[in-house]
Each structure stands twice: as C-alpha cells, then as structure tokens.
Amino acid sequence: MSVLTLRKRIIYDTHGANIYINICTTKIFIEKVKMTISYQEEIKFISNKIRELRKEKQMTVQELAYRCDMERSNMSRIESGRTNLTVKTMCIICNALNVNLRDIIR
Image (cartoon, rainbow, N blue to C red; front, side, top):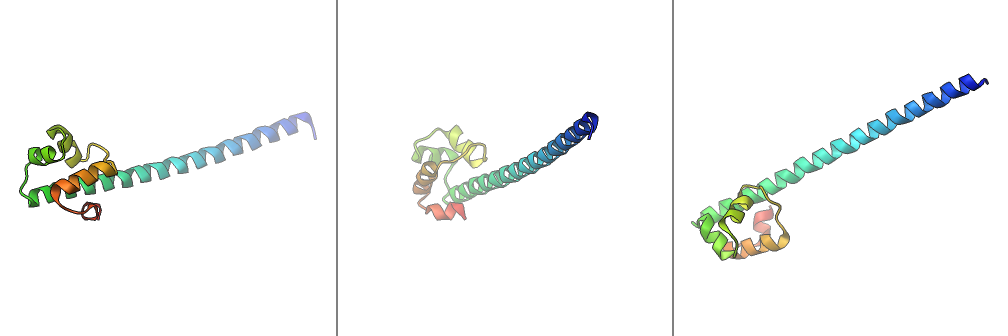
C-alpha cells in the first residue's frame, strides 16, 4: 500500500467520523429542543392553572401577590409563564390559594 493510498484512507475515515459526530450532535440538539419545548409547555400549564385557581377564588393578581409576600409584577410573570417556579414558590402560592400542590401540577 502506498503512502498516498494510506493518506486517502485516513482522510476518508476521518471524514466519515466527522459526519458521524455531526449526526450524533444534531440528534442530541434535537432531543434538547424537544425537552425545552416540553419543559416550556409544563411551565405554561402550571401558570395557567395558578391563574385559573386565582380567578375561581375571585382574587386579583395584587391580592394573591400580597398573600404570597411578593411583588405584583412577580406574580404576573408567574401567571404568564415568563419565570421558572421553584417548589417553594409553588407551595407558597398553593397555601395562599388554599389548595394542594397536586392541584396545580396535574
């Protein structure tokens, strides 16, 4: 086998490896996007549920925020799904609404 043939084989194998790596990277990226979309959908569901429960209790955003000891703007961001909720924050909101955590999760 000549040096030229060997060099072509190495270049070809390296190119094949790069294609494989790119395919794997693309698959990982697609999975991350799917997870992000799913995650955002869950946040939106919880946010909508909080808004729905607040309205059932005939409370304003200001009243709920006051009961949760937070700013009205923060509560507004929570209800619109523009912020990530911690379990602690969800528990505080549930206590203010007099509901169980299970009621807002599903």
